[in-house]
Image (tube, rainbow, N blue to C red; front, side, top):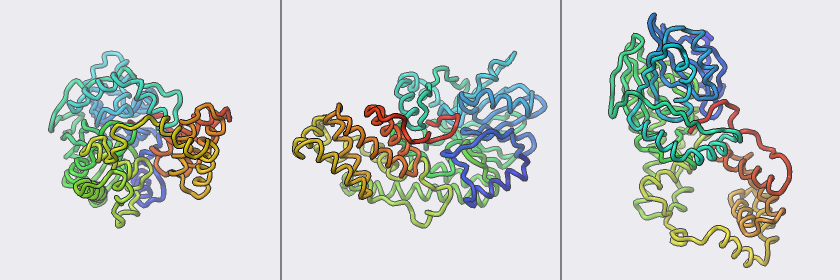
Length: 432
């Protein structure tokens, strides 16, 4: 693919003719020349390469499943020694592609990242089993294994850092958004912006229900800073490039406006003493941005972001006193079944709600039925049907992953055979 081809492709992505985002990430292309000495390696996690006559530098390295292929493609582009790798942040789809390079004779790679990347890797080691489980569920990859050989940075920074490598200057600054350890890079000689995951061609991933704290308000601040740089090329770590200063500024500012609206609405209602249960359905994204291709809720979604904001600013107590020190789910479920006069009325109510299109309510009754009588095959059958329908109806990958996993779990319990869902991401990578 030539620079003319990638510009034409980027135009089609911008116009909405084709999808190329974090939820539909595509790889398989050779390195694409973006500018003299700058290569773009598309994948579920993109890598951006810089070469001179003497060295190679990378911004992000990809994931472990695609490491060998990425190495082969980059080595087809240049045979110069890899001297430097920058991490945009510590998620495993960005930091696990160095293995084949470090196996090369006389390899001597300096890794640069934010100082909190090391803390993230410590947390990953403490919670390796949990991360393996939730990523299997989120991405529907049953054999996924969580990496244990995470390569920590050699050089770190706190607020900002300027480094000259591979013939250009990397101006790095710290940002909080999807993570607390993000490094945004700007190359002034090329007017090139590398936002990492601070831009993913979708609603920002800052509500993820199974992952650590995200930072919506700080994300908006970082996007506004990015918009002031005057970049003419933006190479995100997921999805297609954006060419043109006007488009880059628009994408950054409108994404910031979108986030600001969610944050403002949520905090206003929190400050007014509203419960989380009231706030979640009341917060709505800005209607004037509803048609933006880079603000589709296909990965994360607004109601998850609201819940994450509540967690950040209000803790885990949701305002309902019964849930401060609640009964166990199974105890409550058994009480409901007793009140209903048995399991059958509860299952009937789940089926009625599902047929009426109220899959949220149907899920409650189906879940209660299984909690109350875990040996009931009919309860698991109803649960499988309800969550199967939910998985098919959801747009966001986060919701589909959880519901599809629940449907598969119920089908297995009811001995109904193989699930009828498909993997949430047809990818060799995992995002965290």
